[in-house]
Length: 125
Ligand SMILES: CC(=[NH2+])C(=O)[O-]
Image 1 (cartoon, rainbow, N blue to C red):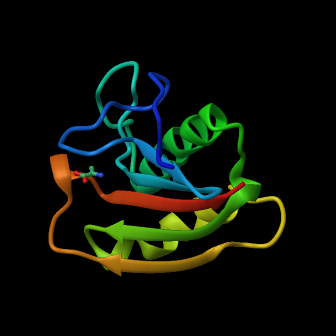
Image 2: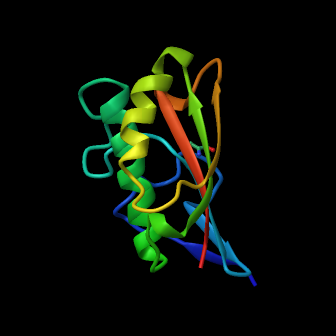
């Protein structure tokens, strides 16, 4: 059975999707833009600050589901410029305590709201 995970500690959806859906012990978190839910804005700074904010949002949704980054099994990272790859990796690497999840990373033409990064996650209970 599908269960919607929702929290006001992460940004509300900006389109027709849920923040996260749980099914059969897996939590699928929609791509998280680096939007601060308190201000509705991106953080000041560069790809490092934006990556950190996307992870803050992911962690808030994981917490709502009773999970942590240790439960993440797969991520997908979308960058609006491959030049951001190094800075994203620096911050990304600090988000995990044990082994890193599987991951795919891409540069795409554009991201919603002009973001530098969007990160989606699959976690396992
Ligand atoms: C931002 C996002 N996850 C979407 O699908 O538009």
